[in-house]
Length: 116
Image (cartoon, rainbow, N blue to C red; front, side, top):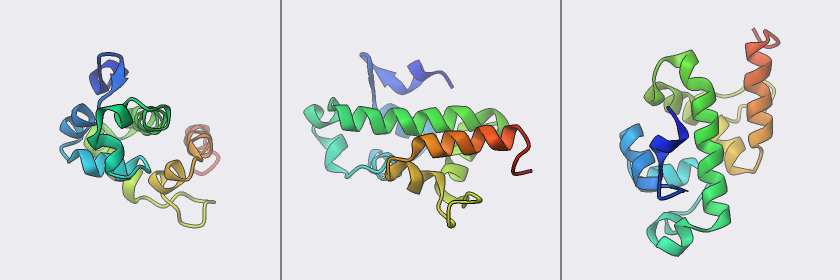
């Protein structure tokens, strides 16, 4: 998916992300490491933290989507698959803890055959 499909008026839109992933906005917020209030009030949706977390989640999903063949399967992986070398944490948990660079590095390492 392109980033534009997840955005509206130049911002990542939780509702659009939820529609693509066939879930709720609240679930998207949780998956990005945000509270549900972050997506309920327009000024909070526009905040730097909310937009950064949504971007990070979308960035990870976009990076693994070609591997899985769909955004839905990529989202399931993001939420549930423990990553080797991270004490059983999922990509969602790592992103929620501000460790998106570790997740992206892990994906690059897998692509290079390091964790094969």
